[in-house]
Length: 200
Image (cartoon, rainbow, N blue to C red):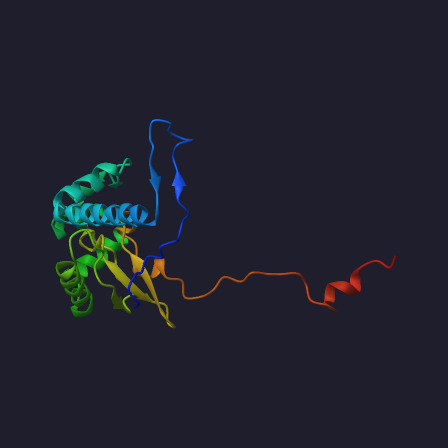
């Protein structure tokens, strides 16, 4: 990737007497380049200082405060949902999901959850974790998966999906369609319908 370069446009000397009568100053090429260099130095210093002052916890708190609509899943708020044990969550979900959880999660679903935990642990603060690909379309979204990036297999390719709180209790397959819906256009030339049109 090429390094960023600034193009300095040569400007004629600018007289400020007309704009500011008290200011008897004429900018020539040398003073213009000095002003531009000072500007870029100040801009770079401000960027570096803002990077030094960056606090991940404060940024996360600010982002949390910006969300106006409070999410609830079947009357349970998001914070309480994330702190729930698996047994408590089983009592909240719908019957179909509850029966699946009662039969127990096998090796493949647990393997997916372990990979999601690993991706979240390796992610930088306030950054999205790496995408984890899976063929498990029948996996039910649990609160622990919120915020993860999952590539859901459609049978042909993977659809990258960010797990949001609204997806809890749904199957992963609901968020990656296996077909393209038909869009019907105009009828073709010589179609059967043409035979039954009245002659003008």
